[in-house]
Image (cartoon, rainbow over all chains, first blue to last red; front, side, top):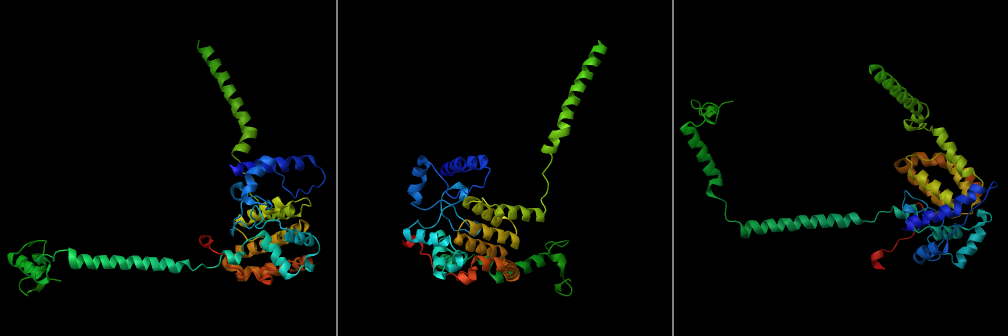
Length: 190
Length: 152
């Protein structure tokens, strides 16, 4: 909704000016009408709308792939405005501190801050390990307390005796298990 | 009877031909053409020209920067220089530094290889306009921590 409104406002304010003028016009201020002002400005306060935002919204959002958000990060306080006046002069006369203030007035986080590691992976790993441990304890509990002992047929002795009996009876003498047993040498055929 | 049918079919064919003809000449060029593929030089000069316009405004410069950052490329130094000069004309120092940061970010894993070249190319402009690189601003490393929104 607000994206459409902003688009309409921008179109209304910018294009005709550009279309009719023959001499260079520097439309630095984006003019919005009162209706749009009532819609947008309660949310963004006194912050200057300077560009095109995500989906046309007049919002501030630090994203690497979108270096210039639609509005400045800080409101136009007298200090900042004074600095902006100074900014119109030679930039070499600005001190490092003033440059930083100007930057922070327009933007919240630098790229390095945006992309700084958050250490969130540690919490993730901890959560995963916690989950695995919990599952392990549940399994331990089930095996110890809930399940009955395994059937007698699952022991090694039983299964060996069972195989011996199959060989004695000659089960699968053509293609099955007995076919692979050498009855003369009493060992498995290669 | 047959002759009438023949004549009718001939005129129909004629009409069809006319239709095809109209379509053939002008429309297919529009409909089937995918436009000219822009060469890299054209791309660069388009952006340089865009930034060099004396009447560029804050909205347009930001749009171009955002678009350029969205492209799968690291902008040529001449584009960056044009952008920095446009920032100067618009009296927006912060945007110049921000754009340099964005260029560095676009270098990605190849920053050690690409950025020195870009820096060397744009250095005269930086000195002329008094723009500090993100490193000189101290923005190559995080400066401030942002409080989590959940703690506010």
